[in-house]
Image 1 (tube, chains in turn orange, green):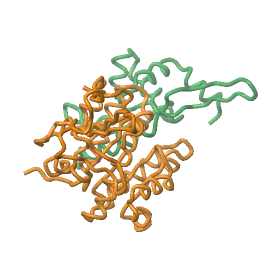
Image 2 (cartoon, rainbow over the protein chains, first blue to last red):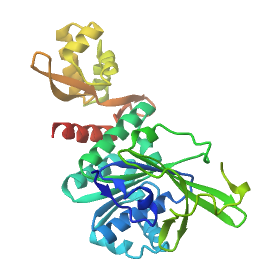
Image 3 (spheres, rainbow over the protein chains, first blue to last red):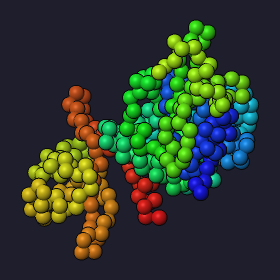
Image 4 (cartoon, one colour):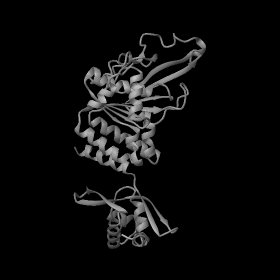
Length: 241
Length: 111
């Protein structure tokens, strides 16, 4: 039996048939605003709150204060407290990019992985991480090495990935093949706002439900509606397919 | 080390070729064979380049006949020479990010 890590996100673990494979790396792709960072925040937060697992949040996109505000705005009220206690370790943009020197933060991080008992990690975003490498071959090589290092240190990882295109004209980048799982967050504009969907396209070693499910972002975070038929909430002309 | 010394070292015969070839770690013997450098000269150049931190000892690897061989990798991505005010030689070091990941990853495979 494969060991699983629960995300604690309503509906998602069910679709994943119990959770994410332990020590694997899953890519969470989507347009800006699709909810990737929120999903990451919630994953780390739930790990601490519900499952007593310490987490690391690496953000190239935001400062620690902004992250805390984002977390609190969706109802993850104890985020700040957990950061203070050290059950959530945040490496924010300011720290990671200090003096343009990611390498020293990387050393710190690698040290943390070695010494501390973290079990979950979010990298927000892979798109930024890859800027530290000179060409595509290096990006691939070091993504593989990095995921190896994370896995060997018993971390179950989510990496967010900026996706420029809208489903279904998805350009499937190489990083999708290099990671163990792929979750896509989709959004389509409607007259009244936006419809959101979640699609688990791949999960190595797992039987998963590969339908596309509606999801919501509201107070309390993300909810995925496992039991709603994917497009029942939309009228015909809204369908992205 | 003065800028002029550094330029002198870079300008020595085979120095540039050695740096060009050591993107991946190479032994002195490999460099000598591939670039057609007499082996004694090859060792001398490697020493000079290492002294100036342009090249670094990367690892001691085990050869096919189970001997330890030193392999070297270049430590620079670019060298920039400026004559504008005082003569200045700027060395752009190889990405430390890749080095750190290489190091951590190698520890894994040994562990």
